[in-house]
Length: 342
Image (cartoon, rainbow, N blue to C red; front, side, top):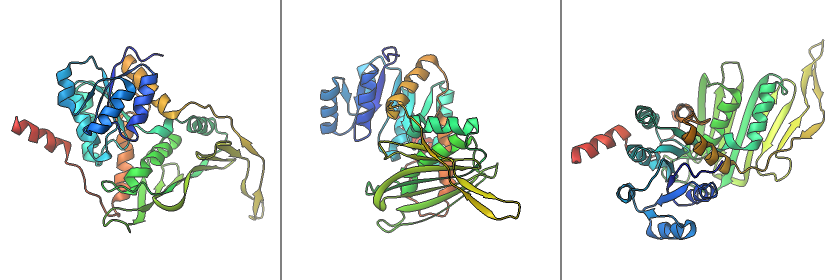
């Protein structure tokens, strides 16, 4: 489907915003961009041949025909910029995390619903063809009863100041696990440590227990000697491994396990490993296309605002025992401040 019916503005033309600009341009939906940095703004405008603005006031004054916005600004500004875009009457795709507090996410979702605007969260893994295939395997019962899931997202670097590793890396994996298991956890706890910056965790391990007895953990770190992005699902019949860094065999189903014999002895079973063919569709392109389709057809996105809020509630519960980063101002206070100054 061409995006010509929907005009989209991208807020944030930095490292990740550039990818949104590229995908939306390929879909014929890109109409404008907003970035406060003059050099970044000028370079993006030259590349994509669209009008560029320093802020939402300049954008509004230009009077462009726009229906939607992508918020790809730094995480601590997501909720604030999202609110401003809603005030312009635009549907929203907000990059993960939706906000840096549950309260701000709730406020943003309530504002979107009050204004009858679509609010979608950029949880990219749910649009990855390997995760789609893994979800189909689980739903079809091929793995048997799911026992536990674990996910490692590890790297050296990309250290943030305004958000800790939990809020920077873990939203991807928490979102995927909630989607794969189709439920919210009934118990969440986490441990972690901070060595580089006081109060900003560098490493966290989050453990979740789900209503059906399934368990999951998410290990994230930016203090790791090598990069790893791996998700493992263990079922009563088979196991599955999604390794996003492998060019070949990204999704493997393993017919192995441990069973008890009549005497209660554990018997190891090792079967074949089967590589599942995975589509080569770029996840971000699929996500942007889904957003445009939802805006056009006025339907609920797969990763809507409620899904984004569920992820934040898990992160907030996990963070209760961790050092907290500096939070962005609450949206409700921000709106009151602007009204008072008007």
